[in-house]
Amino acid sequence: MSGFEDADTEETVTCLQMTVYHPGYQRSGIFQSIRFFNREKLSSSEVVKFGRNSNTCHYTFQDKQVSRVQFSLQLFKKFGSSVLSFEIKNMSKKANLIVDNKELGYLNKMDLPYKCMVRFGDYQFLIEKEDGESLEFFEIQFTLSTQPLLQENNWLPEPIPECGGYSSSSTQNNSPVEMGENEW
Amino acid sequence: MEKPLTVLRVSLHHPTPGLAAFANVPQRLQHDTSPLLVGRGPDAHLRLELPHLSRRHLSLEPYLEKGSALLTFSLKALSRKSCVWVNGLTLRFLEQVTLSTVNRVTFSGIQMVVHIEGGTSLEAFVCCFHLSPSPLIDRPQAEETDEWEGVPQERPPPASGQQAPGHLGFLHGPSQPSPGRATETQLQREPPDSALHQPRWPPRASLG
Image (cartoon, rainbow over all chains, first blue to last red; front, side, top):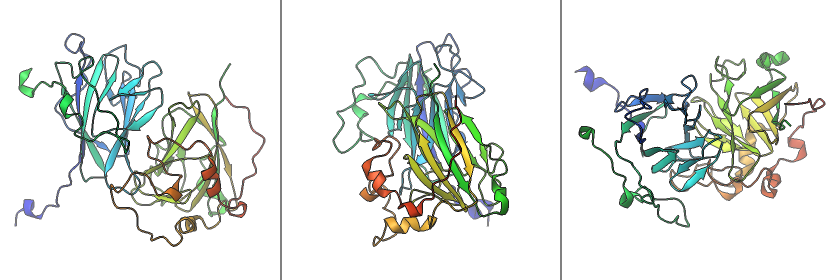
C-alpha cells in the first residue's frame, strides 16, 4: 500500500482571500513586501497586524500615509459554533476603517462578513472568506488588482435586514472589477 | 493632563503551597492596547508557572465599543487542551466573551477574579495583581450547573444562532452591542456574596 493511501486525511484550512488595490501601486512599491498569489499559513491564535511598521506588522505597506499599525485581523469561534470567524479591529488613531458601510474608529472592532470591502485612505481590500476545518491554522492569500475595486457610489450595500447582516451573496450585484491573473 | 488608565484589579489563587505558581507575577503590569497573553510560554505577558497550563492559555483584549469612551475587554481561550470558565460559561479554544465589571474566571486550577475600573486613556491599561492564599470562588466549576439547572448540558448546534440563550447574557459576539459595563441583568447574575470572596485591596496606587 502506498504512503499516499495511508496518509491521514488532510484538513481543509480557512482562507482569507484579500484582493488589494491602491492607485499608486505601480510607482511607489507600497506592496513590495507582500507576496501575491501565495497562500501563507498562520497560527489560528495569531493576531495579524497590517501597517507600516515592519517590526510589529505581519503585512507591511511602504507608505508614510499608513499608520504604524493600521488594522488587525484575528480568528475566533462564535460560542457553540464550529465555524471560525474573523474580526477586524482598527488600530489607527488617524484614519477610520470602513468595512462595507460601517465605520470603525480607533480600537473599534467587528466581525468580518464572508465577503466585504475594507477601506482606509486610498486603500481598498476585497476580503472573501473560505471556510475550512482546521482549528490550528488559517491562511491568507493576496491578489493585486490593477483597477479600483470600488468606484465612488458603486459599492452600495443592501439595506441591513432586521434579522442580521448581509448574506454572503448580497454583494453579488455590486461585484468589484477584478483583474484576472493573466491580465497584468 | 494625563488621562487615567483603565485598571484591572486581578486577584489570583492557586492551591500550590506558597503560591509558587505566581512567582513571576508582578504587583503591577502596564500593557498597551494589544491583547495581553496569559500562559506558561516565554511570550506570555503574564507568566504563570504551572505545568498543565498552555503556553498561551488565554488573552485579555482591550477594545472600544462604538460610542463608548472606556475600554471594554474580551477574554479569549487560547488553549487547545483545556477550557476556561468565565462567569459561568465554558470557553473552548478560540471562543471569547466580553467581560463585565466583575468577572470570575477559572482555568487549570487557578481562580482569578477580575474587577475592571474604567479609565479614559486609550494608550494602555494596567493590571494590579493581588495573590490570595484562600480561594476566591466557591464551587468554581459548579457555576455552570447553577445557570443551567434543569436545562440539558448540550450546546446549541452550530449556526443555530449567534446569540447565547437569554440567561447567558454575559456572552456577546465581538460586534454585538454590549449591555453596558454593569447592567442590571448582569448584576442579577452575580453570585451571592458568599460565593465571591472579595479580595482586600491595598490602597490604590497612583497610576499613569
